[in-house]
Image 1 (spheres, one colour):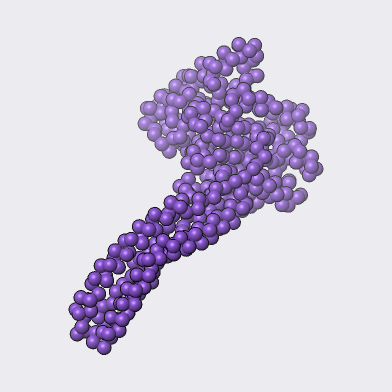
Image 2: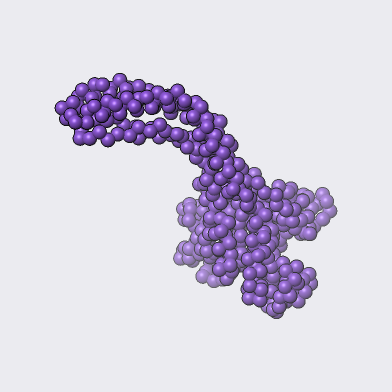
Length: 444
């Protein structure tokens, strides 16, 4: 779905373009492609090529680089100056160039918002069950200078059943529009290995790219729980990010399972906790529409924590908990116990002859060694001559029992996988919806 598709869809269904958009036309990424967008995008792409950008690009630095050029022009051919107007035009041009694929979207740096707290390692992979056996401790006596030796028949040990929080089936992320809740949210994210993303207001295109990279690397369904103020901006932030995710999944042709839900503050929570409202600034153009839907005034997140300490923590814990298999650690421990019991019994059954012969050799070694205790130095070569055949047979036994352990490995109990049964029906955005289904959900 793109600009031309939307125009055709609107015409064929006799609806307006706005009926098919979630954001204002100038802000909705799916509607990028007007003549004005193309002018802005091509102007920025020309800057990109001229200055030789590749990665680590910061828009503010581009702004000053353009300002420093002699006779610098903006996208409309007017003088480019160190003004708010030119800075805003640069931002709009860079956004259009990214939406239209004229510059690489992953090359940009977000210096405005703090980096995400990422607890879900992209490199973590649960190990498959395997057996390990050590025979290196075997040694035969030598007369130089004592008769110390070690002969114990080895037993393989099963591995691969340790629990990690990253064994859980979902990659969960908390996104919050402000950092004033960090003292509440960071400990929860740390406990559940939940990624935590904060921003100063609306989060950037770059933040969404990082999310997609994390989701792709994890190989798991991603669930985003969005926390924002109950005000005109905060009420729209979840949709803005959802729309960005929807757009970039399409642009990059990514088949990822991602869903996003506004978690707090919601209208129901404001009513439930009887939170006090504050006036909305007269300059906020979204105020009238917000108050028509939700009543007069806005509510800050901080009010909930100040008046009802622990409530936000309860809300977040409850939301995350449904995606956590709380019994996985115990089932892994139980599987490890089963594996150990099976290995011990199966090992005794399969190596009974080897063990008998091993201990016969051990007894022979001990008998031979004792006869040489008082003649250590003089009889060193004689001892080695008598032990050499046993050493060779012991080496063969070492090889045989190691092979036996590896043959048993394929019969180890399977590693349990995480299981959850979350209530998965109330998401603002889901990546498995088609465009129209998702549009209907936004409108609802």
